[in-house]
Length: 126
Image (cartoon, rainbow, N blue to C red; front, side):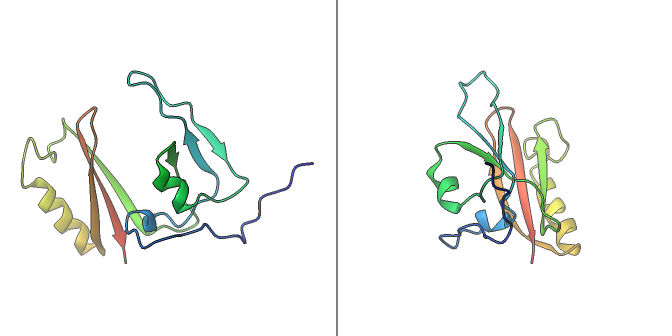
């Protein structure tokens, strides 16, 4: 017998991590084992329970979350070839942040990737 997931059970938030707080919708998340460097992840969907902060912080797997009915953030993925990448224009990101602040996206968490070189901004609308 399969039991349908309930949306009444919230995800377990175990700290005050501003990065993890960007994703309050934790149902129907994606996960994968860490692949070898030249392989792609084998993504699976989990919908039986919400994703907890603890699982994310353990780092034993890769995780991805989906959008909920509403969202408070946007993600900008700036690849190395972009005119906005710091290697092409070191002040471009400041212009991007300024334009987003006008829209009410006032807090940013900046992450850098390894391959290809990219900068990812997560902007939270407070």
